Image 1 (cartoon, helix red, strand yellow):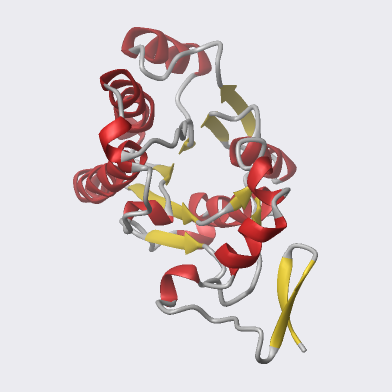
Image 2 (cartoon, rainbow, N blue to C red):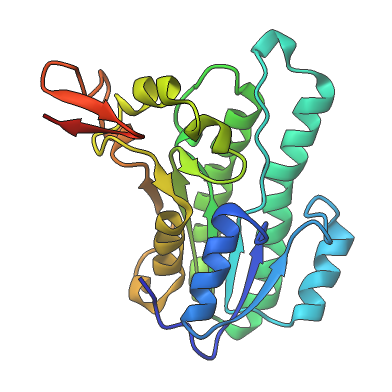
Length: 245
């Protein structure tokens, strides 16, 4: 779905692959001038990020998407892993939102969308550092929406579930893992990067002009369930999804 973003400038961090790449493409399709900030500019480097924003010029839309995910049990989470996860996923988003706000406030308008996660809410095992960073993004979301609303700047977030990206491709190539994981997703499957991009583009668009401080699940209904939706009694797992018999 293409939303009109003509005559707008958008900055997308982590825009070279996965959800970020799909979002950048969708915004371009809507007519936006899109600047991608990826590995050439480290979002944890405040000076470099501020300089990248200055070179780009004042944006109308900023997508704070850059992030990493590394699994480790709680007791096996090293100091280095913890520090790196906090630096990229939490501090990097803070740096991005702050840089965006500083440029947007004088113009009294703008839209910022943060890529959070269903893990902002749950405690999936072996992801202590990741979960902590994604939960922390909700604090940034709510506070920024509160502070920036008077300036006409909207701040929202998407919370994807398991989405097919280069980082998760190994999951999608494991049918047994998918069968068990997708048992708890009412739509019975994983998501595609373009489906998250659609949600991001909506929140960034004028169609969402009265929405701020919201966290939109893009998870096939996963967070709406608790005990699992699918069983072999009336369904079967075919390919990469559950289907009713």
